[in-house]
Length: 262
Image (cartoon, rainbow, N blue to C red; front, side, top):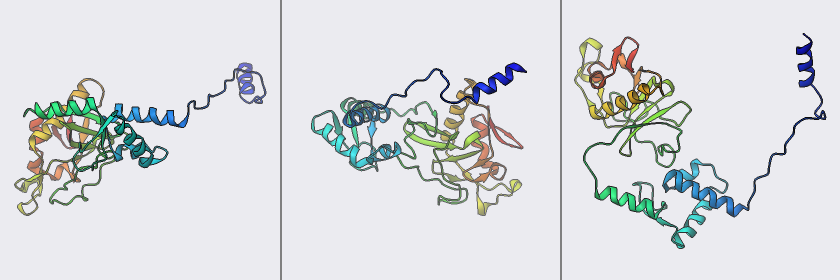
């Protein structure tokens, strides 16, 4: 039609044709001002700034430039340096308010577990795989990591965290789950083909309950689709035998496709 042809002609028109144009503003402020803004954003985002969190940001100058700025802030009392997160060395910086809050939590520590939180693996609130290394993954039938695959901060992946401890990592869609609690070896299940010599890996039931609870809460809120787990720590669910009992007792449903959490 004439209308379609006119639209195509407009799309193919020369750039010199009058229209609405706007100039993209250049980044304002001096380099020092931008560095200060980044440092303040790190303190807000991570609370405790470490080498890993800075490197995950791919900031110009890397950790060396950030370290110089954070050290200057320490000298004027803006931040405190300390050994806050175990295993990450002494180059850790946090505001006085964060340090005071951490001390209060340590003094008022309770034995009841906190509420499990499900996050996107790439969320800045998830320190694992960036500021903090991934915990060791135990593959089915052994204690050495590697056979179960490695967690990533890829798009669509999820993590379940409770009381600052990483419980599980789920790949996109939740088909494969990595559990980070040290497993126990359950008794073999002859019906499933798992003998006593190759016992199935059974995770801590409390950790499994927390994972299922966290996923169920998101699904009930409409923020996540039902999850069908096909592999746990690199082993097909159908080959786990009695090791799936903790999942079904936590509320998951065992189906021919896998463990369904809804």
